[in-house]
Image (tube, rainbow, N blue to C red):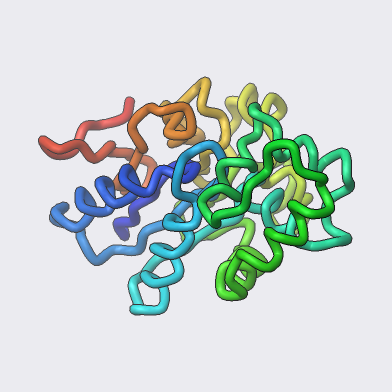
Length: 236
């Protein structure tokens, strides 16, 4: 069983991200790959800082795999003049989605301003390195024993044939299906449920975007151990 760590949805919570990276660094399996399950931005106060930590870590050669989450794609597409419709761009800036907090971390004001001006300022403020990072995020990571993905997989569909939208958005069709998917699926995306182990999958979104502690876990085959300050706790 090759050990591998996974970190759930961060949502701009850089302090929590650094806390759980410290837990990983102190674990006996430190040095094993770390898979970040997406949703680095929105809602929390320091989306810019979270992306910079990921960029710097990968540049330093750390074995970090950063997957795309739906919020990362919203941000990427907001910066593209042809990426998000005006309606979707306005929705991204709403209180429920959290884009305005992401832009605030780059010094871009949103309150009472025309959307065209906000998008223009965002394109000027977000470093190209951050835009390139967002554009290059893969949708899943596979090992012999696991599939790591942001939201989940469409049951009974081969991995190579999965729809990209499902990988970052799927909920009920995946969450309600208790059949084995061939390999153990590790995901985030649904904070109302996680962290949980369902036998065929584990959800590591513990609600950091809503102020709850960020979840980091060690995965050994299908066994999942949450990392705490006092050590590992099995996720059953």
